[in-house]
Length: 376
Image 1: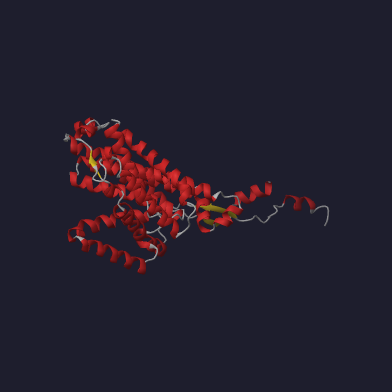
Image 2: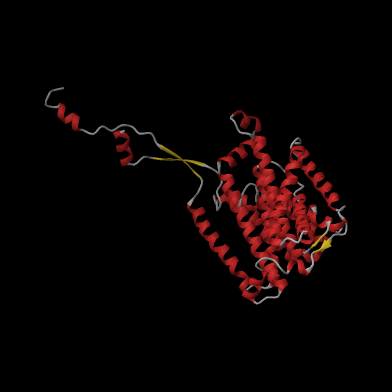
């Protein structure tokens, strides 16, 4: 190399190889559009009592509460691997706690709702270590047995109606926080105004539960929970405290389920042990919703609860035959679509309104990135 050529070589740009950029992404453009649409739908539902009939409001209370129960069972069993058939225990505990605090302690039903959730969570914290000694189907049966035991215990309290149950008096419900404002706003009678108020509470609770679960499963704790479900020994070997994660999930689900139970029985205003701890109403239907819609998805329970509402509205008149048709439909879906209705559609067309899976994407660095890499 000559001396004259050295300045030319020094001024020439040197192209260095730059490694591709890898990014972990969860959201998609479709999910961002779905989030905007979801906010709009919630706003419409908030304003719906201004034009909707009382029957529709009562139906939507059922839809919202069942959706919340389904999402809670889904995160516990689908993401957590704790398949429970005893979730009716927390519905019943929340309902009885509501009746006890309202009728015996004179607490406003609105304030009694979170107290009902705390009571259910406290009982879950006590029975959790006993149930967690069991695994798989033994845990499922154990949770059902625990629910039956709690039903028998609640039936012994004569002050709460014993085995026949009791009702909340109109005077207990006439002083609910916000009831007078709702009556004045829509010009409704106390009973109809109470339905609107409970409708808003159920909607708020469902939105909070859904968004909370979606945020949780996308977090590091959600990833640790999934690892605990798939392979607990391997998860523990890398520092994941599997027992603690599942235990706190169990308590959190019990707290939210107890609140949902309180909201349900605010609207019913009548309770009995058999109804509050019904495995058909609060567990079988919930499992139907999740399995039909799609386990381990946020969208699946939404699809499932709308389908259940449609089937109940059109087939409920057939009595016991209606249950047989529900069972036959569930078996057919499980045979033809093992991932559920939404799970099958999402897999075939790659639709994810609430994406929870992490994707590792490769993107080539831009020219400015190459230059900055050279400078460094």
